[in-house]
Image (cartoon, rainbow, N blue to C red; front, side, top):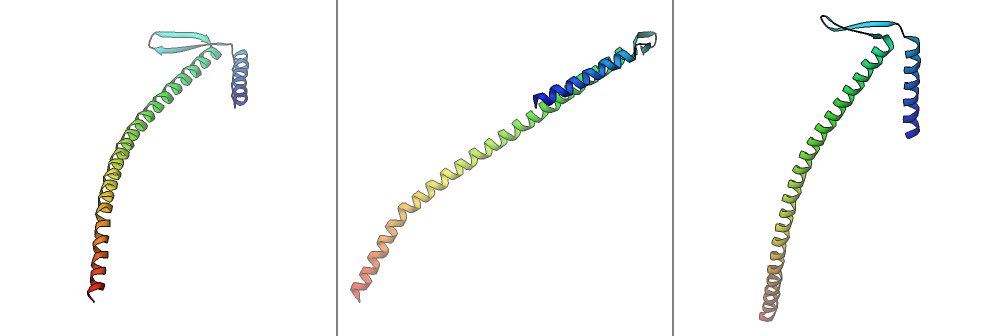
Length: 121
């Protein structure tokens, strides 16, 4: 993957260099009324492209930050839900253990009743 990234960056830089060599005539850019900037066309376009790349990077970082915040909220919600489910599981286990303690006593009574009934007949 690093080789592909290097190749892409190399091709872009080579294209920018060739573009700069071919476009050296001066051009003027007016930002605000009365404020004018004059430089070679290639420099102005490369600066505009650089500013666009920086803005794209800033918006990319911003969207990643928003996604991280959303993910953290979802993780906290999931952790809370997991904690609730673990507490429910512990409560259900305790109830089952309590029922199992009562069950053998009931089965002993049933066996005693069956043996008593068999003895009576």
